[in-house]
Length: 288
Image (cartoon, rainbow, N blue to C red):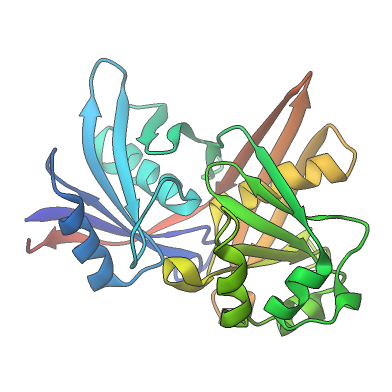
């Protein structure tokens, strides 16, 4: 039997908001195929597996699977996994280090209940023309923000970052799978993050949606990895040295979520953090 925890990541006051995540504690050496079967059975956007703890480094090895396969990094699984470690496995740990296939990340718990993750160093990829993206999202070229580029950005997992002019455009977007599959076959990013500065809630700064059909996730409720990329993108194109913003996501699919993003430029380094609240929903034992 495998201990498991169900949590909602980037939830606010309503514990049934945010992005659902299952976190399993599994024996060292458990086969990837077994993890994949569990992820398929649950059919969450991602399922996380804590595989080992390295005493010498104080680092927990973890792996993340979508219903279709393993991903090297994902934001809400990393935060949710750290939450489980902090509250149930190693309660005295002030900061949780996770060893993921994409690299090592650190998550810390703040006094206000937020969990903050230091993202991997941002990487900026190619820029794409509006004419290439408009047919994929079913949107007129006039609703794209031409003052900012459409660009591939990664803080652990690459996304196509797409700036739109208003909230109606974000609402109206839908993916043409033929055009989508044709493009992602040629680029490293397999998911789209569209956003606008118009929001549902006036206290928030941005509204976003993530489309990730390639991963078996047509629309993600709340994506830490995508918002890490957004933070790096905004700091770069807003012409500022510091960013502290609230991003709402999931409203269009009835699952409101709230993410905090921070970014800061020091000398040539660009540092990004993503944070949010996490709610425990259930815990138990999986009959494996």
